Length: 517
Image (cartoon, rainbow, N blue to C red):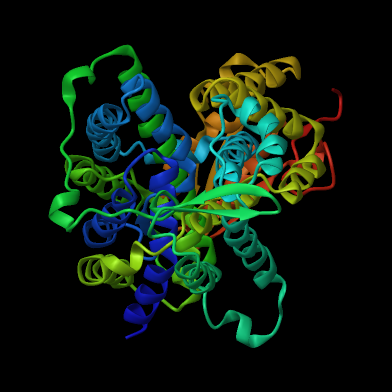
């Protein structure tokens, strides 16, 4: 019963978000719902993270819309079908990652680089969706051009469409600030739909017509509403593999596979931290399930999926106890779009765009930037570099630039090259497992440390990570150790040797260097 309740609540949250993510990705709106249905049912049954909800995510919008645009070269329908072929190949790559147990690679990703990537995605989403909220079609293509064009779109906004979008934004930003108990009875996206749909009906958005406001003429019509095919069978679209081995396709395969894998792994770890007393998730099995789900989704016209953090948190908060909450959420979405598709087609696109603007703001939250700045100037440099390079180029180049800067900073601080190919000394004495790192404890060391921890055995009650011989212990290593500690429900983890190093700030996870440096 708790899983049915949580699945129903997550489905209510997921429906508008899936529609909005699909539209923003250049896919048909129904594609997002197809992905959530496949992710919920197939991903829920096969996954190794029972409380993580599988479905489309805002973090992949930038990659998806880029694939549709670049592969279609002006023909969005062709771009959509070719992007599906990219999704098929990327899914096969993820399945291989799961089989060779490579999901743990996401653990070594610098949190600051990941936050920089997500902040860039947030800015890109806002830059694109702000114009939809205003009811104006922009002329610019680049992110910086879209941002620069927002004042012009605001000056030429469609007043009634802006009414829908503005009210939606007020509800999304305002409801979380209300502390009254009634404000938590329904999720904010559902409240937005409850307000936006009646306004859309009042404005007769289902038929084309013009109106005059303050002496200026504006247009309303079905193009401002969600459009769905006649049935789910009509929604099925098959991939076009004609360009799947082109350089552009390979680039997007790499981005879908890597970014999707990293985001999913980090989400699973985050969800485990919400329920530390529960059994630790199997990230490799979960990645295998996501790859399988992505394969099925891409073959029928759906978006790529990941383990998504917002819906997963809502699932945990609603009291979910098993994988059946994910399955119920997928089944409820299937019943909803199959039985009452007419309701979905009354949703104004401006309301969905407002939800995405709100999501983008949360990804690029100023509070997150301030938190990173408090950790240390080096983390702020990684964040800023990843953010700006991603905005100027693409996700893959942005993340690569952040990681490259991290390596350069470490080398400049005296970290030996051998530390990037670590071979920790692992010993077990009685009930104590000791992992000793020489030279430096930097992000690549997390993989062998994690491997040693997972093989600790039931007889180990204490794990000691010894960094007394390290000239530097980086932020990524310290931050991820806390997550690794949760994989030891019967043992404690301690780090020895940190008191001999100087932290870059007061944050407990700040980079630490030897006193002589």
